[in-house]
Length: 247
Image 1 (tube, helix red, strand yellow):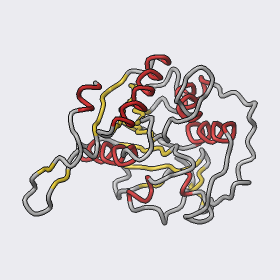
Image 2: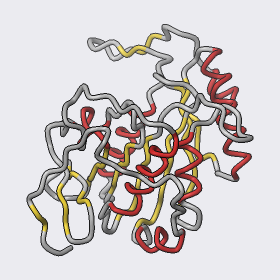
Image 3: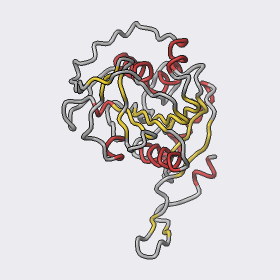
């Protein structure tokens, strides 16, 4: 990997002077990500359904099976992955090859990259328009030294904006899929909750996946039941089965 410098990166909203007219070289990105065997996106059309929780649990499950796993948090305005892993006090380091992601474990088999590591303080807000977000995602994909990974899990923000001809989809979703063309992108895991409004939003995300040719690996219905800490019995506080019907 080369020498790792002790420089700690923190930034304000002025840190990244991005060029919105820059077009990524898919060949270069393919080379940078060629050592990653499988890339999975975690998507939903609605916020608060548990995408980040799903990303963390998926990463931990794969890690416990012996795989080398990376987690990329591209929810630029609401990053929560570092907090969920308990590593929000750590800093990103710089090597000769680029940014070194933060290791969660001592074996260096579980790594995380998030804009939360770069902010000057925990409650700092990221007020960026689409071009800056797009450039930041490109930088995460091209400048982070992931090394050899079995899986890269990408946690995404909610898709709630009207972008181009794909309704209900955010800049981040479109950008990351465009950048990953030709890479080992297996598909998307969609997350929903039992509420009807969540179904409506995830339907838009399903249509988005169909439009861009992104395979759907599975649909997770989250928050449909409560597990009692005493008897481990599951009580369905909300309605259940909607995710199965939608699938």
